Image (tube, rainbow, N blue to C red; front, side, top):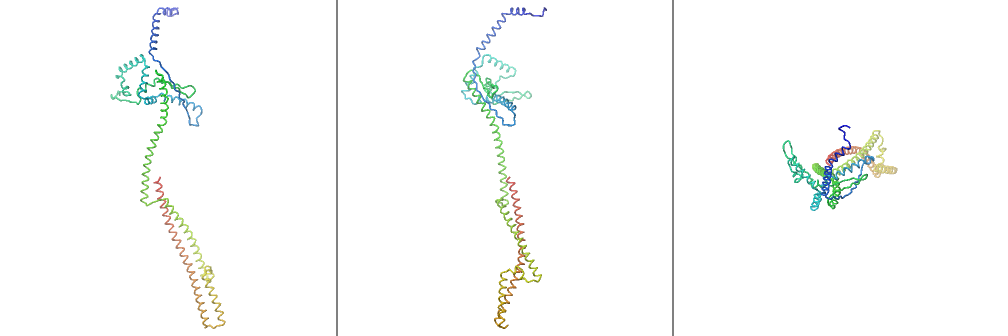
Amino acid sequence: MTSNEINIENIFLILRMHARLIAGVFTLGIFIAAIVTYQMPNMYRATSSLNFEFNSNNPLEDQDSKILLQASYITTQIGILSSLNVAQHIVDSLSGYEKKRLVAALNAQASIIDEAKFKMKRFVDFIFNGDNGSGDESTGGEWNRDKKNGDSLLVRTHYDRLAKWIGINLEITPQANSRIVDVSYYATDPRIAAFMADKFSEAYIAANLKMVTDPAYSKKVWFDEQLKSLRTSLEEAQARLTAYQQKEGIVSSDERIDLETSRLQNLADQYVKAQEATRNAETTKRKLNGVLSSGASLMTFEPVFSNSVVQKVRTEIRDLEGRLVESSNSLGERHPKIQKLKSELSAARRRLKKEIQSITDGIDNAADLAKQRESDIEQAMEEQKKLVLNLKGEHDRIAVLQR
């Protein structure tokens, strides 16, 4: 056996030699533990359970991704539940009496060792940082020194010390294979523990709802601002439209354009009828000229032959001719009756000739009038067409202003 080796016998000899020291240290440890245990206040635990409902609105997600999203969703909600925002919401909802009871319960759980640690920390901060921590107590924020230019910047938050303090005794435990999360709170007063467990649950529900409603409210504010801008633009556009209508003397563009379009359609119908009448008059005139150029009797011309006045005069002539022939057989040429019949026959033949001339002149005049009417209607239709096109142009400009 070398000199560097230690055997079991030597170890026991060493322990035997220091038996009193070991016993003293052990006794001192037990004594200190007893003192600490005696100084530690009794802590009570109250638990409130929350059931997180996870609903995925994406129908294309597979089951594995849904399980992953559900796990991350619960983790996120636990982070929200333990955040300072929820704690500050609880502090803001407490009455003065409830705050006093809560602070008393928090102070009651501090032991002598905790107070010693706190005072030591304050002393170290004062030595190395040159302040006594009063900034956090009085302002709710922290003073930071800008080493470059020496300026003091006060960084403030809306969380006070009590909101940071009450989260120390909060314990959040998700139950395995479920959507239930236990929210536990420890306090020296069982009523405070139960009260705070319920308060954390209620504050989480309110904060979670606020996280949903705040973006919606922000969107509402944005849409309201856009609506105001659009309403202003609309009012300006309506003013321009009204000014244009007053300048052009337009009462109702839609009604006027419908009326003028109806008039144009009416003129178009009249123009078609005028063209047909002109063709008929021209055809009748060409037939009349054909009869005149051929040297045939106008009595063969249908407009003359079918004329009721001509037929009546011809009947009268035939009757006078028959009476004249009958009277000539028994009376002489100079007999007054014969002279009267001849005079009446000549007058009837003149009336017939005059009537035929009137019919032929009427045919010529009808052709000329038909041409003139067709030309007048065509001109009126062109003017009406220009008016309708102008109205449509105005209507389009008004439509642009309306849009």
